[in-house]
Length: 161
Image (cartoon, rainbow, N blue to C red; front, side, top):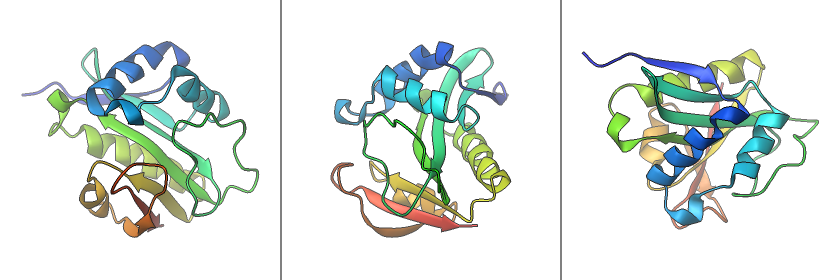
């Protein structure tokens, strides 16, 4: 029986794990810098998680409040969150290939959706990359159209509460 998956809130001390997982999951043009991740942590410390299988980090999820249906630019260091945030933005979900099929995604997505509901957001927004739109559709996300600046085939998606 596999070791159960558990989550912890991400801290700056865990960013080496995030960068290693990111490198294992995405082509270089999707990779964001330590500074971009650190800024997201500083702006909204309670909406980012690291998934563990035992003592091994196996995935992460960065999310934050946002406004409107235009996602933040990929790789852009946020200077502030919108004062008039009206949605929950799911920025980056990454799971090591060796941990796929163990329930990591379900655990991380569940935590993120619970967080958004607790903040009373009526909708959740994301950009599906690398052909992941069918994955997100299983969680109730519907396509809104192409997402500029996120690579070929990137799809902006929304889920209403």
